Length: 446
Ligand SMILES: Cc1ncc(COP(=O)(O)O)c(C=O)c1O
Image 1 (cartoon, helix red, strand yellow):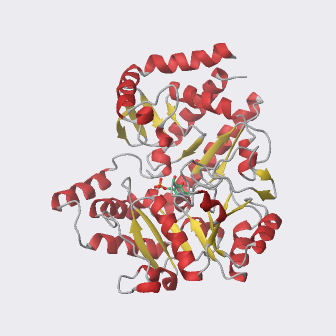
Image 2 (cartoon, helix red, strand yellow):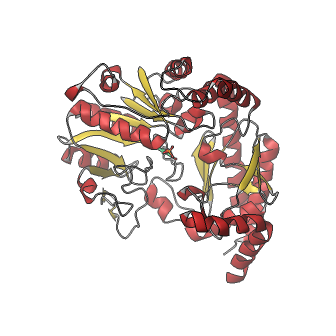
Image 3 (cartoon, helix red, strand yellow):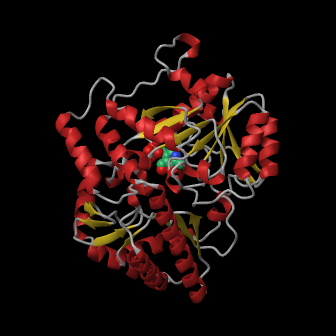
């Protein structure tokens, strides 16, 4: 095994020599040589020179099919002409003002027309900010201090989000009673007392935990389809159950649709027919730029109304909120995303899962491709995947080698095996993915 493992790394090092040199230099300047935890992997990341449609080219000249799409955000692929045109026009008019613009109003209109639960919206720059404000609004509205989230759920990098996103199974406690595990030193220990952790797709356990904290819980935040946790779909109307239990106990239901908004014009809430009180968004709504948003019930969103003061006001500053360049890109992107486009993306996603699962079966691999619509995730386990723990028990060491092997065969996926479809992709790219996976499976055979 060590022999094969080395050959994958050797091949990777052989084709990324310029990246290695830049990485060594970058290490002197930035801890770990990158500025984003998720763009780092060993032995060194490939530094990208440019993107074209659904391809990226690294600084060594390797051309890769980009199934990662900046972690699912580039739904139109790279440098779509309409987005480039909209952004260029705006940059020439100025890139940021200490004033609102028509752009933010137009993007608000577009999102509000599609995402039915969004009566009012505010823009931010990252999903992290969006979930931080949504949680704060839930506390402000209910006057209760705690937020419940799911084990394995990812909501960004603020203190309340960095809880039990990827706990070690040794520390995670019983399946039906997950421990609250802080993910990072530096998160205030007091955070653990303010966050309640729930097991995804487990109604009974979730109901018991929620009831135990019912008078202190302001709301539940959930990714309708678990994203970073492994693209895990909700089962047996789990979202409908969350809607009911939050309503019963006077809590807010927050859907974190930063990733799942790409599943339908109205997001996963449209797909599953469940209406949250608040929704957080990011990724695709910025058309490749840092735009995020939180929106929902007008009476809750009203806390951010600058005409308010005192105990009725949640200040929402942000130097680049509603930035005209980002919102121009977001408008151009959403205008191109008609219902037919979502349908085509979702069909291609389905094709990926089918073709990969056929391949795994033919090769008798303990692996599976799961997901919803245009989102997919490969996992090295034959067992059923319902929640974070099922993924945590998969063969993650093989996934790591497999990711590198796929790069060697010209395909970029997330190191954890996640991928997404973008509009420039055709069946040819899906076939190329399947061929690359076949080779990478051979390269990493246990
Ligand atoms: C569901 C979800 N919420 C929030 C975030 C945080 O977004 P950002 O990285 O823009 O801060 C992410 C990022 O991947 C996400 O997937």
